[in-house]
Length: 342
Image 1: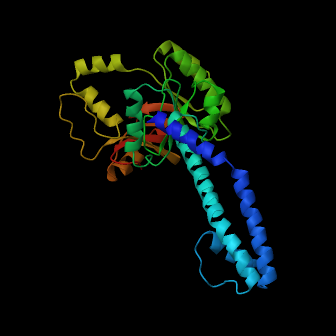
Image 2: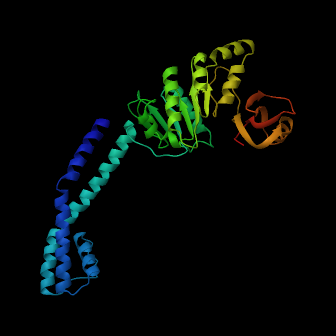
Image 3: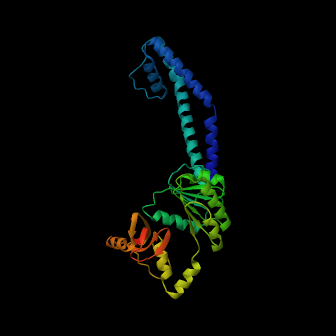
């Protein structure tokens, strides 16, 4: 399919360039001839003469204007004889040029060659197959975030794996300047960095923070080795670290059966296939963060949220994340379990 598109694009490009100047020049000369002769023989004004020329070479022929003098009729025969062919060539040339542009645009989008000037979008640096697909599916499943465009940056992909118009593709090394510029990370709202290894993730994070503007994006990084978390923490900016929790989940599941399935379900925006246990999450309950305008006591805000159908499970106080703190703890942000974002 791609081979045929490339061939078709090459043919259209050749046709578009062939005799383009001659066609435009011929139409211009014929138009000038028509204007001069109709104004001279028929006494028409400039606009009337131009209108007659347009409806004549396009074969529309409204009949509201027509030559009545011998000289005008003779000149009209010349315009009609040459104009039909030149008009068809001009229209065909314009249509071919537009088709070429459309094919070039689709070709760039499909093969990751485009540059996107989006704003408040989500950039995913790195492609991990099904893992990355799961991330994109989760983003799209959140109805409050599903309309936000997503740009996937990868040098391992050959074509865009998504036909959805909301998912774009940039083929580039994720830690390169080219990747940051063409995905416009400077104007992104969220950047997820999921490199092939920790070194790739760290270098990419440095590159992204360098290009971030005065309104920095939230950067989420995935680190395999906990020893490398300290390197990410040294990078300035709104950078979060997600580390593997598989070992902890294994032990937790061994000690308390179904805990891992419960956690997996809460972390997903849709009901995942977590195992043999039947998961009933009819209201699609998941975890959300709510930033408060002013500091509030944890106990009071918990009661207010409970009346609205939300379960408060933690908060942030003085930059410290607390899980179910004391009632008299002042918090600036809370984490709730609910069926939709507050």
